[in-house]
Length: 352
Image 1 (cartoon, one colour):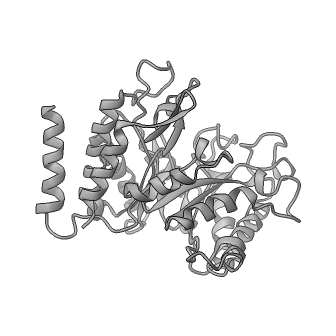
Image 2: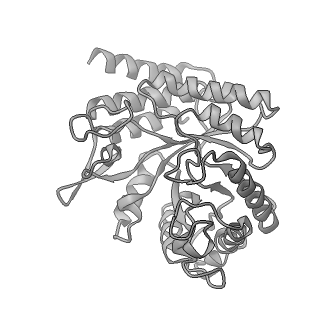
Image 3: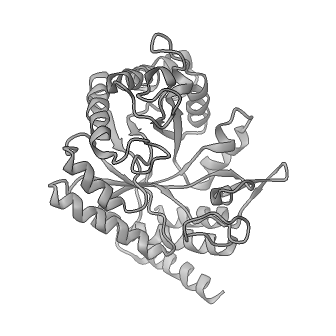
């Protein structure tokens, strides 16, 4: 209780008494929406809760195999339309993670983590998405009842430095080819679009260094990290290590996004994990402290966005992330984790 009181005091001091500029911009804080949120179930009430929580954007996966399962001639927007429309109805921005390769385009057919055989195929899919959801996107003209919330930021893949998402390792050379093609394709379709680097987990600074070493400078507009670590203070240290690499490669002014921040409350529930698991109380405490520390370092380290992973998870299976949600499916019922209250209060305190 004493520790929680100290954290609340720190939050109050940070926002109420700190100089202007300690508070965060409107779109600084968001949540990831995946799993049960995007499985086709009716989750309208959950989208409303996201908007009421203090989050102003969602990061969601757009799976290329779902959009173009049999070829590039026709694009199926059903799954991605559902996400973008639900978000727009509640005033939320969407940041897509465009990932995985359909069998027809894969260098290794049947392996969704395979790099594309030809990066241009991925580029053309991005352009189809911009044509649907960008500033002049067809979705907005089909739904004049909605305020347009065009997608301008596109995250290029997810965690390519691990073979679960990019089966060609070492990854940097082949991934930089994708980045270069992707950014060019986005800019052709929307000159104001930004290519957000795939979120880098684990030794993220070393992965970024290998991207730069493979000629990656100039192929993305923001660096993204997934700083999974036990202590909130170490999240900031990981951003600092990454920023050091960026300065070395003359990218010191480029923004950093934290596209996954989490401490799953899975301790005692599953044997899997990477040493950053905790219980429900610890999750709420680390969430508060992590967001406060990142907000305090925002200007110094140019931290432009932060996303909590995740909004809704299912408490089942071997993965620790089943207990990462601010909301959770438990025995057929959706319940709020203690961390949801912590998220709401912290979001309110960090906004002026």
